[in-house]
Image (tube, rainbow, N blue to C red; front, side, top):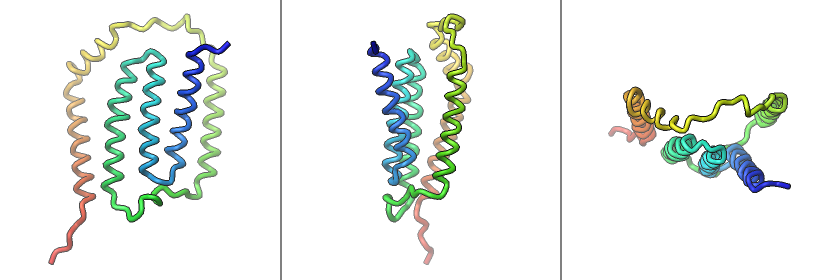
Length: 169
């Protein structure tokens, strides 16, 4: 009755939702970052299940790798007296939950009302990844390098700002 693909998707989807909720509801910010990394990895697994290997690779490298490391650096460089009390709840929890529920219901309604006819969609070009790679390492190599330098400068700036300023004698 249920195929292996459906069961594995259901398990991955459950874990993905659980880890995304863990990002939001964990009181310890380090635990929130770990759940964020798990969310990124599970999203990459979802891309793999959709036969989008390139997107899965980009998800792992850019988000699970780079973004998670940047967040960990930001957390560790921020001087807090007690990391267990860094992600406290506030009065916006109930309005945020109501807004999230409304967005979820709206997106679910759009999903149900959309006529899904897969026969109308064009087939994926198997050479599309080669074309993307040619563009990334050819025409758009300078913008990617500039973005990398900008991220490096932002990281160095964050480290300098986080350093303790010593009083002058």
